[in-house]
Image 1 (cartoon, rainbow, N blue to C red):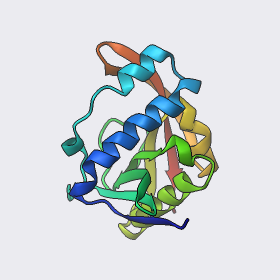
Image 2: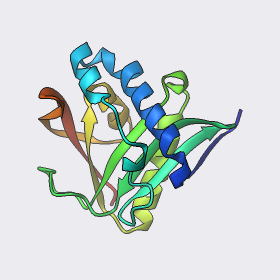
Image 3: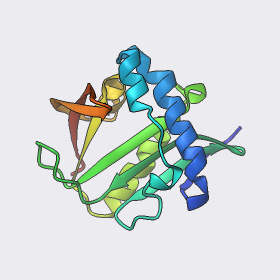
Length: 166
């Protein structure tokens, strides 16, 4: 079945939330403990995703009627990066049933295309440990590690990464 990438709409919120939790629970166990995965996959509000925010570009990947991935970018990076970047990739998540099929790469390519068109010269992100090799394949370089709290005091490491677009 054909994979399509489109801009997310508010009605996608529940499906995005369900896919987000399934992706964490199904894919993060290779790099994080069960307690870390549980804390990361805590209950999320379907209305909490910045689908309609003018500061983000939020896309979903579909096969037929099924959502198989999502991601978003911000042309203006938040200030939590240690490295100097213009924009950020905030998320790329893929359904555990759709890994290794190019879904993440297609989502990422669309987010980078948007960033380039918005005049972004460099992108930063915080990658989960299980996603570092994916981003290295997209030409990102490791900058440093950070420890963040997933929820309820449970912490886990992520890797800050950077890519030049110019």
